[in-house]
Image 1 (tube, rainbow, N blue to C red):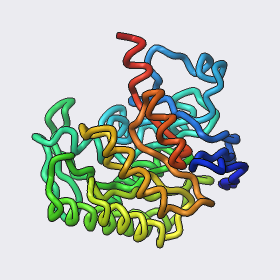
Image 2 (cartoon, helix red, strand yellow):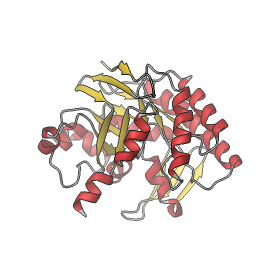
Image 3 (cartoon, rainbow, N blue to C red):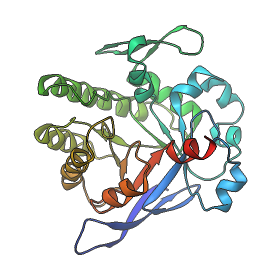
Image 4 (cartoon, one colour):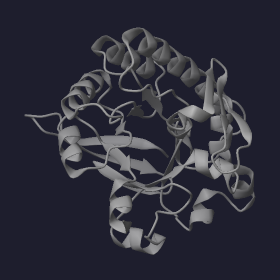
Length: 279
């Protein structure tokens, strides 16, 4: 049931208008996905989200895994029933949250060992585990485990990080295709590459070679100057195929939307709108 149709492209910029079709409804792009970190978009009810026209929302794998647990959510009928939301849901892999708690984690080729910020318990998140959790949650679009390098690291570190992300993506794809799929679930890829043009291009090429239904651009808006954000975004989008949706992770200001849409981005998510509103 998953499909993306490119309806219109601006002749002067890379701006696109498209439509994503899923078994739970259509999504008109460009689209902003409100973030329901722990299974609810804070300060907004599902009915209010539907009323304002939200067509897809995002939930956080890391937090839902820690509590109430993906197995419990599966027993309760999946994330859609748990959240009282019958439209599409995207779940991230939990990787960004693991790495943002850098003082608590240890990265290896196998995955990431980390201490829970909830109770200090020790956990290990592998690419396979990230997919298993998201299969239990039952989101429509799921994301692979990736490493999001800091903005100030050198070329050598970033190259190794990108290689690790690509290896993890191949393992995620294998795990996703192994055994029974959860309904019409699809797996997107994530491009990294830090702030180096050659690594951005290489990551986008290697990711798209896996022929996935959609592609995300990660590792941006992590403290760098906006000019650098837009430059790296433009490089990634120049490599990504036009016939697949493009998702810029973690971006949420109106100006960022406009600048990214002009470079060919279709999907966005960020906690900023609800965080600003409730504070």
